[in-house]
Length: 430
Image (cartoon, rainbow, N blue to C red; front, side):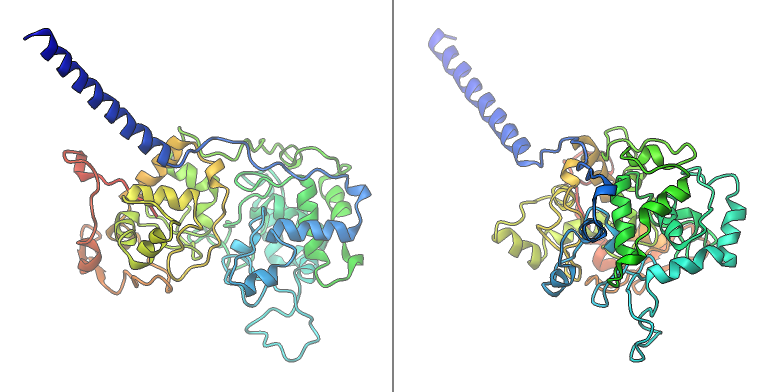
C-alpha cells in the first residue's frame, strides 16, 4: 500500500473518530446535568426580635411558597412551599389533598357549614384537646421508651406543645384513620420535618406552628416559642434543627439522593411516597396525589401521547426514550403534566440527585409494570386517563400467576434497550 493511500485511510478513520466523539458529547450535554448540591439554606432569624405578625407571614411562605395561596389555587397552580405541607394536608376547600388530617380552619359558629364536608374546628382548637385523649395516652404508653426514629417520648401537655411535637415526631401521635396502611393505625405517613427531605430549621418550624395557631387572625394564640422551650426543657436557640430534636436524634445530613442509595432509600429520602404508589417500595403504597409509577407500562405510552407530542412541538419537553422521559419528569416536572393532575411536584430535585442516583431511580421505575402493580394490589388513581388496572385484570387466589386481561397496556410496553441487553431491559421514565 503506497504512502498516499495509507494517509487517506488514516484521515478517514480520524474524521470518523471525531464524529463519534461529537455525537457522544452532544448527547451527554443534552442529558440533565445533575449535581449533588447542598439543600436550600434554612431561614436564620432571631425569634425574640420578630413580631408575631412577621413570624406568621414567614410560616405562611414556608407552607405555601407564596403570600397568596388562594390566588394561586384560583389560577390552577399548586401553592407548595419548602415545608411541603399542602402535598398531604388540605388547607382550602378547593385544594386536593387528604393523605393527612384536614387543616381547613372554619369558625365553629357558622351554621351553614356541613360538618360532614368541612371541619368546623381549627387545628389550633383541636391541638388543645388531643393531648388529653385516650388515643394520645395509648401512644404515650406504647412509646414510653422513645419513638424509634427520633427517640422522643410523647409528652405534650398543651396545644402548642402538641403542635411542636407533631413536627419533630409525627409518630408520637397519629390521628385515627391517617396512618400508613398495615401499621395498625400507628405509623404516620408524614416525614420528620427537621430531617430529610424537608429539613426545616427550628425557627422555620416555629413559624409554621405560629401560622397554624393564628390562622384565624387572633395573634394572642401564638405560643410557639414558649411551647418549644417547655416541650424540650431548654431555652430556644438558633442551633440547627437536627441538633435539638431531643433524646439523641441523629443529624439529618444533606438532602441528596446518593449513588450508593437503593431505590427504597431514594424514595424514602426524597419523600416520593407522600404522593406516589410504587411497586416494590414498602413505604410507597398509599400515595394518591401523583400517578401510579409503573413506568415500564406508562413511559413508552406517555411519550407517544398527543399531549406529550404537543409539549414537544412547543419546545417544553425533549425526551425520545422512556428513560429520558422518566429523568426529565424528575428534574423538570413542570415540563409535562400527566393529564388529570396538577403541577404540584417539587421543582428542586435537580439539585438533590446525583446523576448516578437519578439514573438508578429511572431504571428501577422502568422495571415496574401494570402486572407488578396488580400483584401488589396497587391501582391507578381515578383521574388517570388510562383507567383502573383492577377492571382489566384478575389475580388468581394462590398468587402464583396473574391472569392479565390488560392486553392494551401490557402489549404496548416498548423496549428501548439496545439489542442483546439482558431481558430486553428498558431505559425509561415517569
